[in-house]
Image 1 (cartoon, one colour):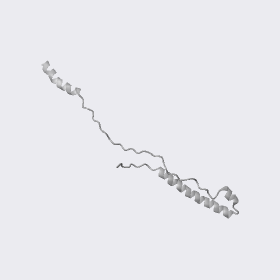
Image 2: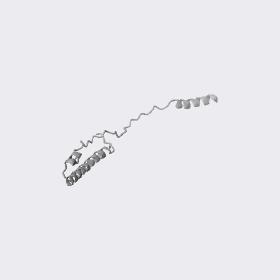
Image 3: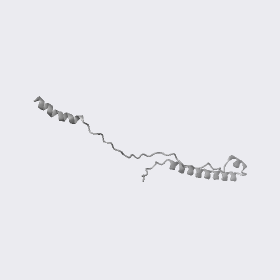
Length: 98
């Protein structure tokens, strides 16, 4: 009886001893890579309301005109800088390879 039990257990134990070969899978993973921002707004312009220009202005009306012109120039520059920074702040998108 013992012999029969041992003979019956041999195939069961042999099947547990041999593990299946590991299966290797290759997967493509797409990851967004941050790149340095290349948007350059350029150098700061020469504003018309410099202290030298204001000192050289004759009367109050000319000084106010210079100050208003400088304000418009600064507003335009701020818009340029905001456009450049918003272009840099966008999240990179994934592009498909051909």
